[in-house]
Length: 160
Image (cartoon, rainbow, N blue to C red; front, side, top):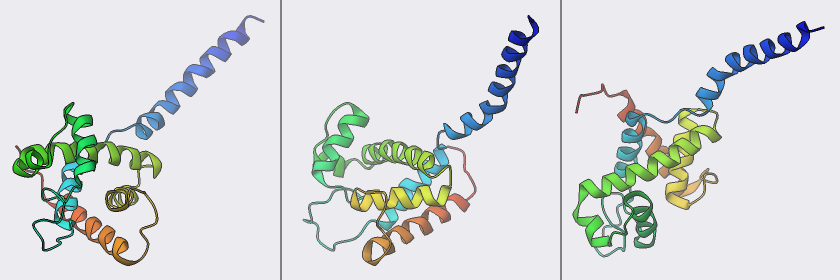
């Protein structure tokens, strides 16, 4: 009679070990290379309005109200649009921080399907929603981001 609790415990250990790779995969974090590729893709796909007074800042064309929350979240302080605009390094740091957060979320939501995650982040970047970018301007924008992302990911890694 005493064998059964031991077998039950042993079975639980075996199940735990067999599930741990699946849990690790589900919780994996995106790589720095994936974040860098997404950041560069968003920069390259940013709509160019042709006006210097369009109310959007930096190479990523970020709205001032968005910038406040992002900089507070990522830098623990609010940046002014001018600070963001005048410091490409700080702008890239903030955009990278937000992009990492969103890519991680989308990788989880898409069961680690990279292109689907990139599409979701690109749609969110443009509209605030992860879905609904299937036609018109937003679909074209998402496709541009995906193309630029794939170009960046296909480049050989260079040491920093």
